[in-house]
Length: 144
Length: 111
Image 1 (cartoon, each protein chain N blue to C red):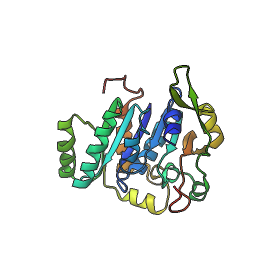
Image 2 (cartoon, chains in turn yellow, blue):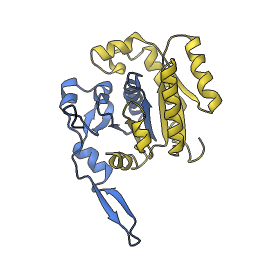
Image 3 (tube, chains in turn yellow, cyan):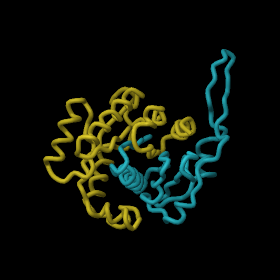
Image 4 (spheres, rainbow over the protein chains, first blue to last red):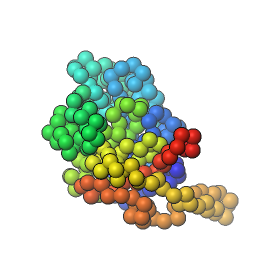
């Protein structure tokens, strides 16, 4: 499966979004090694930050050009600052800050796409801002 | 752009991946989505009907073959172009997204 996913990503200038297995196993096995961007989703509590740090380190070891953090379920400035303080000194940019949002809970329960049931929700707005930061083009190799 | 999304279980990574894919598609990119999680949920976060999403099968075996060059170095290659694999085994999601589910664990212990 790893080889298929690596090769499926390597075709053309379109966008591929790869949702990895939860945890670190896929990063250890190199499933994401064809990716040019790795987004590591981190929640503002210790165990999540620890796992996210290891995931980001593994992504860099794989040679992924751009590795960034997406802070999720952020309730206040203290949460946001806690995340920045862990990652920024390691040279890991926080590319997105997604607030805790009841719309996400509702989408999970329905179940439905968040963008369909709450297109103007703070969480969707935050992912739009993340896409703005990612830009239209992948980073040049070695620039990240 | 080839974006991979990682995170702990329950971190919200799949909601972020699905929403990210939809926004990129709405902004004009041809988006392909790959669900590599053994408990696949990306389809629903992309906005597919849950019943359709649940019935999706994973990729069949046999899509990779090993090739050896004259030095004896071997590598695995896809037997078809990625485009064909997405056409053949993928499903349509909203905003023109094409989704492939890598592996579905049908029963505990088989995955």
